[in-house]
Length: 367
Image (tube, rainbow, N blue to C red):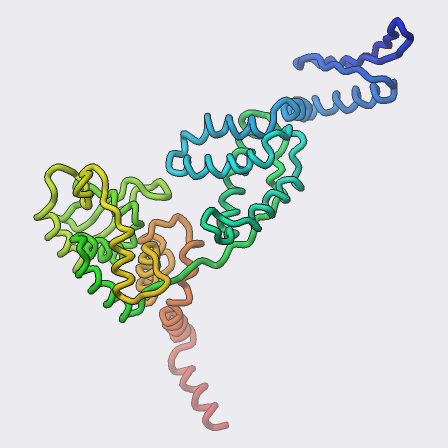
């Protein structure tokens, strides 16, 4: 129930003090100069309390956007160690733009303006920021809003729900043709880094990411049954990676000369507890091989592309690469067109039969 009390000061100024009391909720009060405003506030507040909206709105007026970012970085990001550093940087960028605003005043339009500014700005290297990068910034902020809305009850709803993400590119597919692959492997063999050739062969034959490969320890390797267990992966799930053929032979030979002062497969000579740095020897090998526009991560594209061209299905490619969904491997679908054609032909033969198809061909000749 709402009650309105009229008050008159010594100088004759009139005001109206409103109290809204509902069982089970704290009393809400406010003062107005006009009785009509007091009645409207009482009606709106009582309705909002009954619908569970009022106190969220009140909290949104108590906390700034910066408060939300700070609490999220302090309480939530430590539970996401793999992305903690990157998302801290991304969220602090948002805080620089909107930190002083009350959460109640941060609208969808404000966030859209920041999104567009981010999309049109350059990176530290002076290159145009990609839509994919902007999407990562937005995802970090979106989760912060989700936590603030659902767990902290600071907001009634997230303004990110209506913000459209920039359209990402279809994804890079750069893989080595037969000649490029041969040149690269020869250059890796000639490298002063004794492990580079093995690392490149393992990367192509298994599809392991660079950090998955470089953080391998000997307890992860089962040479008897020819597989590696990846405990720390990007999607958080363990993955079993088979080792076959040339990669197995090289790894078996590498085991015979392993360093006894470390468990790492590819330790730095100076710091045995850390993996050696691949970037410089790999870049030199790429340059020596005369290959343009090729990065280490493209070795994963090689794995996926070669699998597709050898008839592997998209689910099989996803399983090898460690993707939870097919979305990331659909970029390789065009490389398996020949395999798809044979599957379609097989299905048609089974349904219509070779005899019916031959009759259709004969009829066409008669015409």
